[in-house]
Length: 390
Image 1 (cartoon, rainbow, N blue to C red):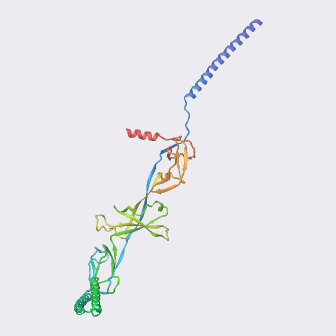
Image 2 (cartoon, rainbow, N blue to C red):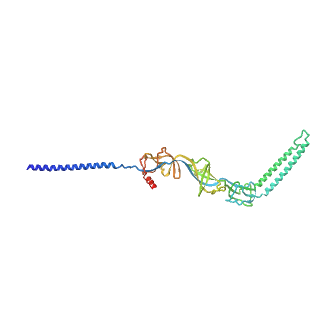
Image 3 (cartoon, rainbow, N blue to C red):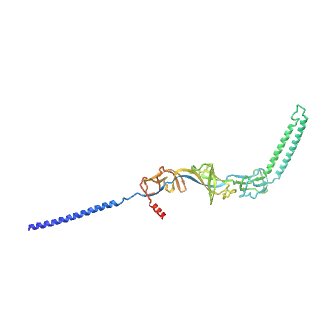
C-alpha cells in the first residue's frame, strides 16, 4: 500500500518536471526569436537627419558700375536784357519780340528812329571831307616851301610847313574817328539778337522813347540749358570725374543726353546738399531732330558713377543688421557682417568675403545660429528641372 503511493507521487512529480521543461524551452525559443528580430529591425532603419533645411544660391561677386539718380528743373544758363546803347524813339518791333517768341541769332528785334543818327553821320562825313581838303592844301604849301628853301642851308621846319601838315593830318584822323562813331551809333539803332533766344518778356511798345541802357525785355540763350541737381552726401563719393558725358535725361517717353559739368561751389542751407550742374545742348531742338525740352520742366537724370571692384551684390531683403547669412562648403551657417558700400534700387553692394566657396542663403531656418549645421534643400530644384525637361 505504501509502495503504490510512492509510485503515484513519483509519476506526478515527473510529469510536472516535463511540463516545466517544455515551457522553459518554448519561452527560450520565443525570446531568442524576439532578440533576433529586434537586431534585424535595428540594422535596416536609417538614422533620422534632424538638420534644418535652407535654400542657397551662388555668391554674386561682380565689378559694378554705380548709377546715381538725380533730378532738377531745366533753366536758362544765360539771360540778357534787351537794351539800346543810346536813347531814342522805338520805331519798329519784330513780331517775334513777344513773350514765348523764338528768334535766331542776328535777327533784328527792335529799331529806333534813325533820323538824328543819319543826320549826324552826314555831318561827320562833311567834316572828314573838309579835313581832307585842308590836308591837301597844307601838303601843296609844304611842297612849294620846300622848293623855295631848297638853296638855303639853315631852313627851319616851320618854314617848310611841317607842323602845319602834321596838324592837318591830325584833324583828318579826328574827323574820321567822329564819322566812325556816328556810323556805329546809326548801326546801334537796331538791336540784333546775340544768340538763338527765347523771349522771356517784353516791356516796351512802338513810339516809346527810351533812354540809354533802359531794359526793353529779356532773352534766354537756347544754345544750351542747365539743370541744377542736388546730390546727397552719401552719393557724392560715387560721382565720376567731371566733366562726365552721356548723362541720360529722361522725360515722358523719350530721352536726351547731357553733361555733368561742375559743382556750383555751395551747399543748400536747408538740406545741406551739394548742387551740381548738368548741361543740355540745344534743349529746344532748334538744330536737331530730338524732342524739345522746356525751361521750367522737371527732369530726371541718370549718371554713370564710379565702378566698384569685387563687391557682393545681393537683394536688400537678405540684409538684416548689416549682415547676410552664408553657407560654407561643409553646410555650416555663417553670419557675415560687413560694410554696406552702397544701396541701389532693391539690392545692396557689400564687401565680398575672402572665401569664394560660400553660397548666399536665401531661405533660413526659423532660429538660425552662427555655426549651425544645416541641410541644403534641393528637392524643389530637382522637381523643377524634371518638370522643365518634361
